[in-house]
Image 1: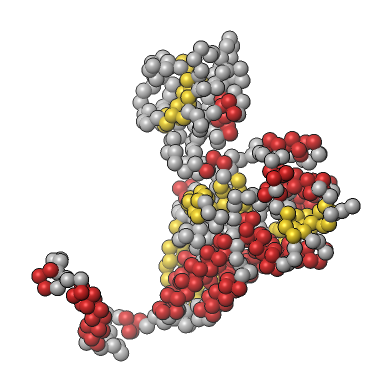
Image 2 (image 1 turned 180 degrees about the horizontal axis):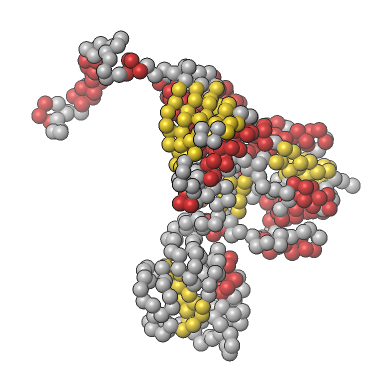
Length: 529
């Protein structure tokens, strides 16, 4: 007898495919739901996969337009940035995905919803607060917080074995040594080799020296790193900018790794496998003895020449999928004009090409295209998760970065100074609420309405240039501008008497005089400038 129906937020990947089959093992009827929010996904293949694994129903929902209009546009109005740098691309997508998941659960009479978020991250909070807010009586199944599940599946190897046993198609391409989340607004990268922020970049050419266990040797006809080599207590030495075996130039500073960072015994005895797990790309390889290079080790050495091979700190050059390296971007800028009304973009025009977009989805997609072409919107940060730990995240948000720059400009041009000061504080609060998963809270609803009201007069056009990773504001115009050229001009007195400034300064100085008098900084005690 079925325990009930569960709506699973499904991606088609290994984790959620295993969760689908595991839920069925536990006695649930499973409905899978996959949201299209702009990620590069084969939705038809995902649907067939879910059906083949026994999903009772499969829902694939195109949420791109509502994602832009209902979720991205409010973040644009708010100038929403978490901890001064993160534009909230993942955080703002979760309430959009969760809202439709709850709608499906209610419509299908499902008592349960489920997801594949881990027990250490923010997404579990964001998904579940959304579900509880919009479907208070729902029950949530979070496998990665259930001991029976996470004790059974301690890593990708366990998931792969489970998949093979149950006929779940497994990935045929090597998995990147980091996790990735993509949507229309951004791509985020974290985990894996990106978790260590301390080790320096090792340059483009790396010499790898290994000192094996005393007395061990690769054996006849075998090279260092062969599966029969005893490396159980080896020490790995990494040397940046090595120019070639036997050459002493450009060695620079060595990085030496021993236990616990280098523990080949935990990953099998193949050094090659260990290096690959750490993100090495073996574009060229040579193994030979280089006597005297590392006295007193006199150990075998391997050396590599080629593109960045190991980078446990800086993001690998081939990590980014949404943006070009600014160094490789076009040498001619794109000049855009973005028109705003009520603080949201209503039209974007490429002034050189004469190309225009005026629907929300088209506007944002086009800004992604232009920003990506010029390498705009890359950041590498350490942030504070709501759950209480710091994490490293690498993000690329091309269209969102362009809009942030443009909106800040037109907002300052059209908004009263004191209103903007209050609104800035609301924007910070809004960013924290969204990051922490409280989109559907009463306080976030209140803040969103206040921010929307502040945008009544944020109207006009901003001209900007996108070039080599940067956005340059060129000019702006607005029928509701508070900028008075005659009033501010140094060449025209206008309706302003400079003598009034004397009283203004004296009044503001009263507080400062009193403060410093009480602190004893008067007369001869004053610090000399």
